[in-house]
Structure formats: structure tokens, C-alpha cells
Image 1 (tube, rainbow, N blue to C red):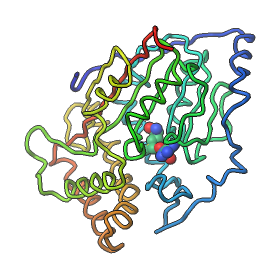
Image 2 (image 1 turned 90 degrees about the vertical axis):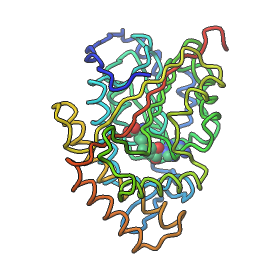
Image 3 (image 1 turned 180 degrees about the horizontal axis):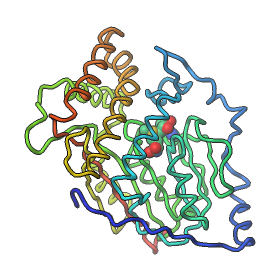
Image 4 (image 1 turned 120 degrees about the vertical axis):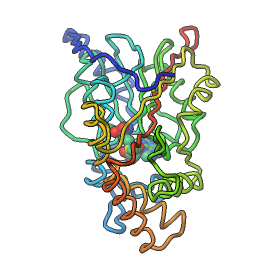
Length: 337
Ligand SMILES: C[S@@+](CC[C@H](N)C(=O)[O-])C[C@H]1O[C@@H](n2cnc3c(N)ncnc32)[C@H](O)[C@@H]1O
């Protein structure tokens, strides 16, 4: 495990592919028989509205909004990850010219679009239960509505790289999720799971154990655990990947500072973006978990949200806090089918 690793800048690799090869992968048979459901006809767009926020139509699917406010938060978090990894979109040492990449739980699709740009050789598919991705996309990127808690519909053995980021709290069965990723990967293909902990830490004791932020995080974790959707992924992912049959497993742990306390400029930039991100995240993560799962009143919920947001703002220089961020990657053995 590597803590606070310094990652070299990602080289701007551009792989050109001939028109024929490009056309070939765009029209692979399993692409034609795609599981894509047309956005206009899909009930996924029958959103639910509650307490001023917009949600996926199935209440049990995902207790976090999918509205513009939440999408802005996802893009802010993407900025935090990008800064942390010096612009690298992943750590798995995938082939320089991948042909097929899958991003499960793609959110706004920001990662998939970036990866499509970096790897023009690849056809990139991003899926999500909510069709919140842009409609006008480059020819090598497409988005599908799909539920990763159902058996994956992609043809087995067809992807070079499967990526999942920040899907803790959404995955119903992590060992099963790893098995589905294994199934759709080609032999020798890579999986990467990037998950921040639902936890704040400080190394110098400046974050008090009994502060409003820790109380809020304990409630959020408990709520997701009660739903049967664990948020404790980082410490377990290595074991889940190993028992699935993956090899060359690596788990790297980074610190994502929150706030304006770091003296180093890069760390402070990350901390500033992450502070905005967390202030945005508090409401979206809390409303349903507090009111529906923990059965708190809306007034209590609003108070807990306001307390956590205020503490983030007021203590951003005093609490030297960070979020542990786990990135695990592993390879499907060449010998497997
Ligand atoms: C915290 S966001 C992360 C988005 C994206 N991976 C990123 O890192 O920017 C979690 C995403 O998972 C999606 N999601 C939740 N449950 C899902 C499911 N069962 N199948 C597919 N996507 C799901 C949500 O709609 C949301 O867009």
C-alpha cells in the first residue's frame, strides 16, 4: 500500500487507428445487440421528486439524488481525483491501445468521456441506472441504462478494462460485482475499483472524535449498512478480488485532504475542491438516509445537514482532515476463459 503517493504526470498518449479498424469495433456484433434501452422510452426518466431533490424512480435503487446539483458534486469530486492522480484517469497498467472499456455506475460520464479522448483506439461504454449523461458524445463513447446489481448483459470476455469509481453504498453484493467484472473481461484484462472511505481522519489529532462531522459520517455509514449496501469497500476489496480469481492485485491508498489547511499548494488545491465537494455532498447523501432509513424527522435531518456543512466551513483550517481513498486494480489471468 502506498500512502500519499506522488504520481508522475500522465503522458498525453494518442493512439491513432485506421478508419477500418475504427469502423470494425464500432459495429461489433454484440454492440448491435446492445442492452441499451432508448433513453426516451425508458421508465428511468420517470424521476421522483422529494424535499426539493430529484431521484431515480425506484426508491430502493439509490438513495442519492441524480439532479443537476448532485451532478455538479460528482464533477467536483472528479476534479479532486484528477488532481490527486496528476491527471491520470486510472492506475491499472492496461494495454496502450485498449479496444473496449466499461465504466460501471458512470454518473455524469465525465470519466468515460475523458478516457475516450485519451484512448481513441477504444470503444468506451458507461452505464448507470440514471440517464444523466450528455447525449452528444464522441463516436467512441456511448452510455447505456443498466443496473449493475443485475447480471451484467455485456458479452463475456469482451472488455480490456472495467472501471468502477465511487459506487460504494450502491453495490448490493461486492463479491458478486467482482464476479460480473471478471466475467465480461477478456483474459489478461484489468479491473479497477476506486473508492473513498466514508470517513474523515487527521494524523495530528486536530479532528475531534465527537465533532458534528464524525456524528454525520457515523449516521451515513449506519444508514447504508442497514440498507445492505456497505460503504466499507477499501479494506475489503483485495479479498473480494482475490476470491474471484483475479491476480496481480494492488491496492494503493491516498489521502484526499478536505479544507484549506494544507500548506503545500497542490494539497491545498485538492483540499479546496474537496471542501466544496463535501459541502455539496452532505445534503444529497443525507436526505433519504436520515429520513427513510434512520427514520429521523425532516427537521432533525436538516439540522444535521446544516451542522455538518457549517463545521466543514468553519473548521477547514483547524481540522487537518482527509479522506482515505483506495484504488485497487487487478488482472484476469491469461489462462482463464
Ligand atoms: C457517486 S456516483 C459516482 C459516479 C461516477 N462513477 C464518478 O466517479 O464520477 C454513483 C453512481 O452510481 C449510480 N448507480 C447507483 N446504483 C446503480 C446501479 N444499481 N446500477 C448502475 N448504476 C448505479 C448512480 O446513479 C450514480 O450515478
